[in-house]
Length: 288
Image 1 (tube, one colour):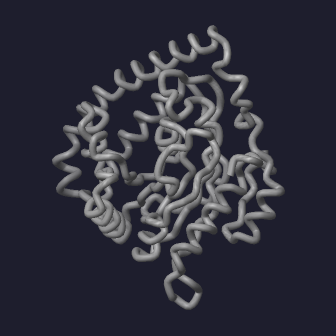
Image 2 (image 1 turned 135 degrees about the vertical axis):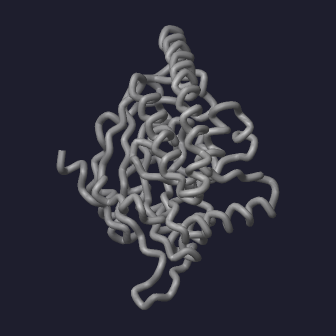
């Protein structure tokens, strides 16, 4: 399937051309109107969601115990990256999603090495986005509302892994998160951002905020744009009580440098616009 796995250029002018040439995987060309429109399909989707959450929680309990046992050693030996905890996260997410939907990867050759601290940026459609991105097997921190960290097992696991809490309405919290992300990147820990800021209800990609790109520029870290395809059709934002069967596509684009060839820092706004164009280049027409 070489044609579908082609590289997509990181430059805006090339991104437009790549978008014209790119053919979205057939598994991700969903017609939203075909899902969940009948009483039977809605019922099956609800049953599937109950099974998904039950299965996920059943896995989380023993894996959390493992994470708790590892934590003292991780805190002493690897407090920034916490690779052992991330490994457990990956196992949990992969086993959780496997019985319910499949994930296909495109452009895996574009992934930086696991020990490089970089900024991953992706479009945001669904609760399933994080589950799906864990299948890339790259350790990254992600930013989440502080209230999520209070959820038993799941939130506690996020704390043990070192994910970053944010109070969305608190300007000081936002500055602290940006500082934490920059420090993490400088110490070799990658960070995942959803630059839209929240999940898209319509399925169309919203405008980007530049925080992720400011962090990348200040830390001199590369930015890796990622296109998520199909998660919003399997589980819509606001419709977490149902999950449909299917396949999710993850397109990893070539990394973008945050410094110019002469060593000067790039403009964060320019990087933001470029990354959005690259992510859009692999999305179905009319969704960006």
